[in-house]
Amino acid sequence: MIQSISILGSTGSIGRQTVAVAEHLGLTVRAITTNRNVRLAEEQARRLHPALVAVTDAAAAKELRVALADTDIAVESGERALCEAAVISGAQAVVTAVSGAVGLRPTLEAIEKGRRIALANKETLVCAGEIVMRSAQQYGAEIVPVDSEHSAIFQCLTGRAGELKKILLTGSGGPFRGWTRAQTASVTPEQAVKHPNWSMGAKISVDSATMMNKGLEFIEAMHLFGVTPDEIEVLIHPESVVHSMVELVDGTVIAQLGVPDMTLPIQYALTYPARTESRGDRLDFTQLTNGLHFYAPDLDALPCLALAMRCARAGGAAPSVMNAANEVAVGLFLSHKIGYHMIYDSVAAAVEALGAGPAPDLDTILAADRAAREFVTAYFHL
Ligand code: NDP
Ligand code: MG
Image (cartoon, rainbow, N blue to C red):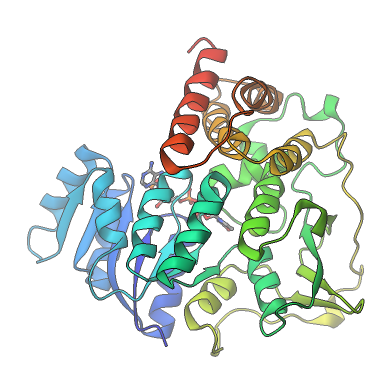
């Protein structure tokens, strides 16, 4: 049983819920990290007494060092500090809850130490899935997904090696499900971050609205479960009750159901293979009076999902280019610099321009990631 963890991105949506799970399970938290949320990092540090707080932003780190001067908690800054938090001594598992490809290096370093990775940071697998999975195999590090769909698939598949026929990856369809292209043209960041069923960080909320999130999850599932694109079917399921399903070779379908509450998959990633009591709400089937619905996504109306599925099939540099371009485009949309449809336009243009190359090693992947970021910035003349 995992007794001690490190939390990368502890001030974010998944990070805060991980802190709650850690407190519920009585785990020791050895390190926490933030980009620049000094106030919350201080509060968490005083509650959890980690050995290290890693703060990426240098000015924020300075401020936090002053705030925690009366404690023996170390405060380190810069991107290197994120890696130090990932490999800190005494932690058996690392919850990767940072947003974006910045999670890649620390995840790889933790894998090399043989730590369990409770993986929320899907961008890591989209960007360098083959390398991450190969490395986990080599160092005997378990990767247990936190993403609710992948946790569901993982739970459905546990003990069923060799029996899988197809993954049924569900998604709610986001806040603009059923809207036309004309209707979404004037969508604002404020509208895009309001998800009907889940409360999440800003970037993933926008990804959920564009359905790029389901595209990233499609690629994430390929790597986590070693399947081809043809072995994954995406289903729109507006109620978010069935978190995903697997079809087995004999036609049996196994699903994992629950209330939409991320503390559940977070807790399971830390207690696996055991289960323990959780504090969350329970599913009440008698309240599901409108039923559960499933239908195929309209790929013409969801260009980001279609693009991600094309990148999944293309492989090589395409997924990392798409992922990096999307991170920049979503950031620009969130700061009101570009319109909603420009997210897809710029990401597709980046994939078209840079996505055809191979990605044999980490350096090539990181170079493709950088080039895609520069491409999108130049695309908007910024
Ligand atoms: P948030 O934006 O809420 O939190 C992100 C965390 O990462 C914060 O602690 C943030 O610090 C930190 N961070 C952001 N950028 C950097 C950076 N450049 N360097 C160092 N730290 C950084 O994201 P979420 O919690 O919503 O998502 C985290 C990950 O989990 C994502 O990969 C997402 O796709 C995945 N995920 C999230 C789900 C959810 O329900 N939220 C569900 C399934 C997966 P600061 O507070 O200073 O900004
Ligand atoms: Mg998900």
